[in-house]
Image (cartoon, rainbow, N blue to C red; front, side, top):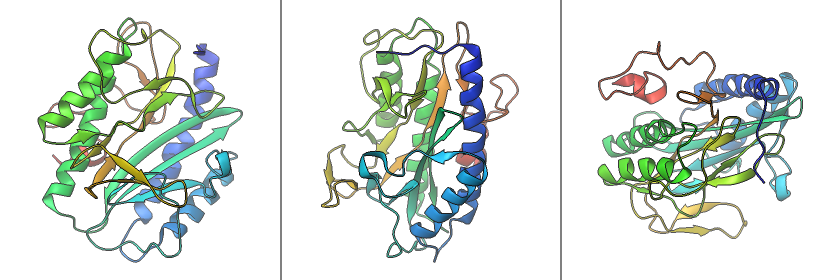
Length: 273
């Protein structure tokens, strides 16, 4: 069942999103060669709890940590470890969810560790662009297939492939709610978007093919061909008119944020253009 939120509830999610943005910004700054993913997990949990929130991922279906830290060919759900020491040239995806005052926020990003290859940088950039292409379709009256098609078309135009085994999702009081939000699809198909829907849009884009395999730990999902994978996610709310509110990106304004040469907002890696 899809839960529609009122303005007061969306504001609660916006408050949670603002805290998550601050947490992830500090985690991003800490990423460097030599740091372990366990170090990043400890930092994230400290920041979340200091902000009066709870890390949603810790304990979720037995997951042991407060973030997912996925390196190189790991798509999602990489478990932080003292053994995973970041190396120059790696890419790492950080996925984090928190609950503040009963409401969830979910966001993810991929960043390079030190100097990375041009192909890795192109993958990260394309994945973020896929997010923007997708949420430009998130207008009341459009369908989820419009979103998924926009993501897939942009990924494939650059020679990349959206992962099919993991999806975005509804979000609210629970981390995962209906509907599933696919990163592929057919225009005009799927659930119709309505004002008050809150969803996590999260392209996961591989440099190779979309097939994945799950490690013996039951969580870590890698590309089967061991190609690099990037991940970018925000929690959004559908409006009656115009583009959605990005609840995990404070102060973003569709009309005022400068665009880069590709026509995408100058934030994160896209600001480098």
